[in-house]
Image (cartoon, rainbow, N blue to C red; front, side, top):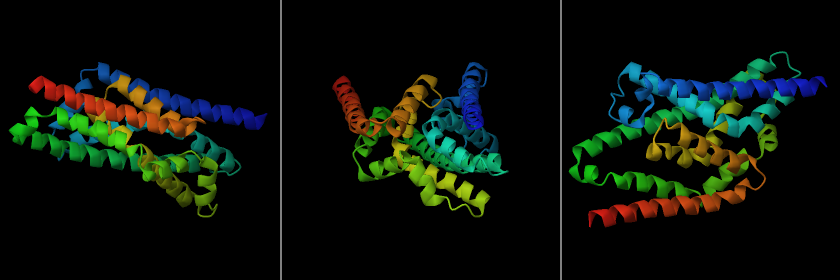
Amino acid sequence: MRVVADRRYFLLLMGGLIALAWLTLWLWGQSPYGRLLNHDELGGADLGNGLVMLVIVVGWTLMVVAMMLPTSLPLVALFHRLTRQRQDHALLVCLLLAGYLSMWTLFGMVVHLGDGLLHVAVEQSAWLEAHAWAISAGILMLAGLYQFTPLKYACLDKCRSPLSFITEHWRGSHERTQAFRLGVRHGLFCIGCCWSLMLLLFAVGVGNLGWMLVLGALMAIEKNLPWGRRFSIPLGVVLLCWGLSLSLAAVLASS
């Protein structure tokens, strides 16, 4: 009974953390500073400004906790259960989460930097500015094509097998270092599985809670449901068709 109660308490704690991230994002969006979560507002921001970078880091980390942590709860909960007999098991779980979130935060910084450079290129090119629709269409088709790649499935299989992943990378010695490294490795495989879907935020609008919920649900289905692996190909087809239809509509509108 104690084990069951401990597991329920841990899941409630993780659920509360995720709910707090969503609530913070919603309150932030409703505040006078909500524009700082908006993709268009940050697109032209000075990425060399320390305050701007801090806002981006905090906002992106909240998005990762809200969207990606639910997809990795099976691994986190299993790691908690396997280490619960250790006196420092709470610290080990925190180090696991820190390693995982650090990889997604680093990914977010790289993507935001690339997005900022892309905005500069659009502002300096009349052709790109007139064909800005091609960027969103390209992101959609890139995400769709990635759904069919071997790398996508290799990373997805790692994410869908939390027990084998932990036994492969957890040795039980130098526990704190290993816990952080386990989180880093899982974060890298999670990025390998979901980077293209997260990139869609830049096509549909970073900070849009509705799209965040949709994309988070899609990634959770892929990673955690029994039939989730078979869901990847239909999702890829939908994204490709969406990108192609967006392109066709733009071409027809300009002709």
